[in-house]
Figure 1 (cartoon, rainbow, N blue to C red):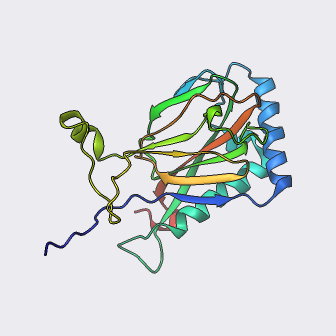
Figure 2: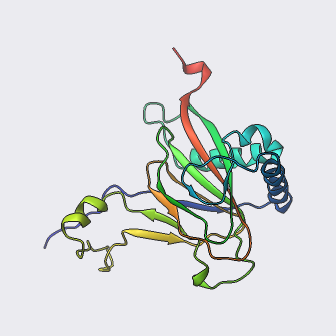
Length: 215
């Protein structure tokens, strides 16, 4: 009988921000920066407001605490193969905020040059409405599939339970949720149709040798 093995899994980590005061402080910092620079910048966002990437500087202590939280999550999921007992690398964080309203979205993209990426939801914008019609899901694209689907779009490989593999996964955001995934994983946000304001923070973690290990 043939033996089936599963190779090359993609990690995806979900956690919850525990401090309501910290979430409020992050929201206030974002609102203040939005008022200061209401134009922002445009990268992957389709509508909405995208701040500059210096939130570590203008976001205050709450932003630094969030970056530290992301770095702790990354540490728990990463091993220095050359020095497993004493990691020679540290994380350089980059952080920015997104504010979205009805009809806004983010196109598929990834983050070159980073190792881990994370998204923290300060306000999911759903106002307690659980209707799936509100959209706004975080979409994760199976990186193995695009070329295969081009030649045989109706075929699906099977999971261990015999069900067809998903080639795109939807995650419905929730206020206080923080998710982390490899920076090479393509992701997007479906058009948000809620009546509230969606506020999220994106974090990139760049791996760099610590000062003591630079030659």
